[in-house]
Image 1 (cartoon, rainbow, N blue to C red):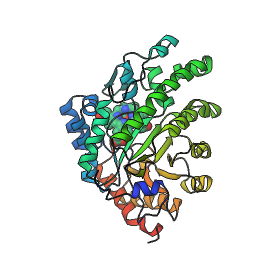
Image 2 (cartoon, rainbow, N blue to C red):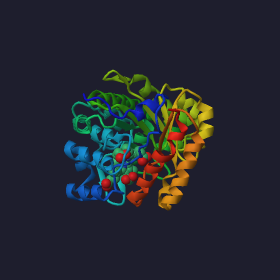
Image 3 (cartoon, rainbow, N blue to C red):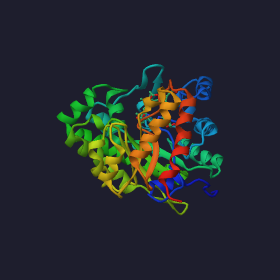
Length: 355
Ligand code: CP3
């Protein structure tokens, strides 16, 4: 493998000194980019893009051709695992993901196979290897998966949900059943992330997008406990380097200490948490990634620059910060506004790092 030319992300996630704060964006490859929309229209479906390594590689690289980002993130989705379990994933225009065969009963759960990542998910690891080759060491590649709880919400509801009525009913009526499902998804997710690492992912992120919907104790039992198992069972070294793991629970600001105690390297923060206070709470245990409100990118470039300056000041001096949005970039954001954000991080962050 070629030498990594820009290792700011990996260093920051290990709280090592850097010359400036590394920056990337959640959902940086996607619909806000006209070149993505064009390729997506040609391919005909999201799964065709994600399922064809050449196309997934191309889409992964698109934002890097436009912007001086410090990381690439694999173009795929958190729902590839249930798809590989046979649930039949489709993305309907304007409706989001839909499963043909949602999981509702004990029999459904007991019959679910744990997919072999080298077989049913081979298209993902092939994409990872190809992207690594094409990146040629310019920036590190981030692999990812959904948290078992977040993925299970889609498997049980059959798609996106506002109230999580079926999975919450299962949680309260039949907690053992939900644990059986979470256990299977955890096994599949661990094997999947380890396969991504073996194929060349240099850091991995677990998206717990809907952990914040859980009641206080339920979060620990039904989401955090399973992410902790994943962190414990991941391969943490590849090519002679540590492979950092980042956990992101949207709406999880109140659980940062518990999340940091899982043994992960970094925590993703949404915009509802104060970055400086979060830093004081987790101390030197983990790095922090975030946390600009994605809606700031609807504002003018001047406002974007001052909001970037505020986030950087809030974290303060020293290592351990990865600049990012507090959630994914919205499809209607003008790409130049993302560019203004990234440029501002380049311009304002060196003062927070001693050289
Ligand atoms: O650039 C990147 O960040 C990598 C690609 C990526 C996608 N999805 C591509 C995608 C990543 C990291 C994800 C993660 C993901 N997928 C999450 C966790 C992060 C988060 O945003 O909370 C979740 C909850 C999903 C599930 C999902 N996938 C939904 C709800 C939808 C439809 C609505 C939406 O947000 O777009 C998707 C589809 C999807 N995944 C698209 C993309 C670019 C849009 C599909 C299209 O082009 O039609």
